[in-house]
Length: 259
Image (cartoon, rainbow, N blue to C red):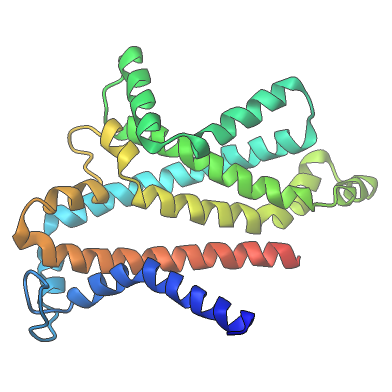
């Protein structure tokens, strides 16, 4: 067997290993069987039941609210952090970089436990505020890394040229720097938004009464067999939306590399 054909076979096997469970889940969301053990015909009733499940959509609203606000905060703070890390070289920035990358290396369970311990020590009740802080914390790292990668190839002489033509620092940043960095910022934001929507472990530790996000709701629904078909339908919708967001993020990043 020649090497290219062997590589293709390995690639197909890896893709099947990774995505076969997702395909089975998506197929079962249209299966009339409640337990999905065998195919009993095509149906959309599980999507109809999902549409009528008010508690699911309430959790969806909470999830989107937390994801949107934490992503916006992470995009702002992450861009500023990336600029500071790229432009400044000192021992302080070395510590800064370590703190930024730490959430990427720490297991989620340690991240969740440490955040909960901090909130308890500060006397902050778990709820929407703690959720927002926790999600902003780990989303910040991803946005910073994406924008920092974009800054590696950025030509800062463009800012000097704008200053020579009479632009102020603010005008040069707003009209030159920001437009060129915007694709990277949006790519990092989309990645952070996707991770925030899907997060379960950290959210489990820092959520409070009335702040049940969608992943937490799905986990509670898993305890009853009658909810399994609805979970399949909901998971199918989440897979589709996540795939769309990740595709948009990679497209923006590839556009950055071509720019």
